[in-house]
Image (cartoon, rainbow, N blue to C red; front, side, top):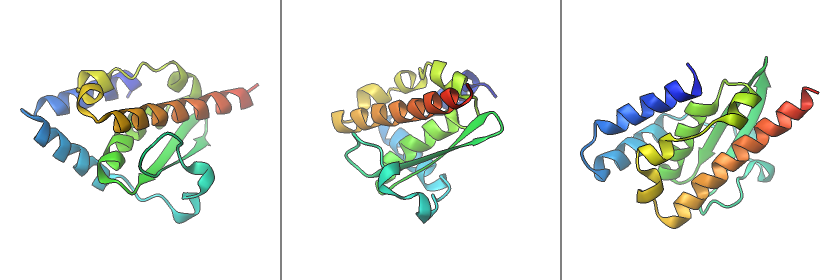
Length: 140
C-alpha cells in the first residue's frame, strides 16, 4: 500500500468513532498492539527530542525501504507513534521525505491533543523524515 492509502485507512478507522473518548481508546489500543522495541534499541541516541514522554525510534534499511520501530512509556504516545510507524515503515526514503502526513489533521489529532503532545508528535515526524534524509544520502 502507498503512504496515502494507509493514511486513508486510518482516517476511515477514526470515522467509526462518534466522540474523542472512543478515539483515545482506539489510540491506546493501537499502542498496545505496537511490537515491543528490543531493549538494545532503547538507547539515549534513539530518544526523540521534543517529546514530553520518552519515545524511542529505531530505523534500519531493508532493501530500498526504511523500517521503523518505536516504543514509549506513555500509552497514548505509544499509540501515536504506532500510527506513524504504520504509515511510514516499509517505504523508500524518498517516499517518506515527500510524504504529506495529512491524516494527523484529518482525524483531528492536531486540534485534540494537548500542546505538549502535539509538539511531541511533530518531533516524531521530524525525526522519521530525518532518518529518511540520512538514508537517502547514503545512496549517493
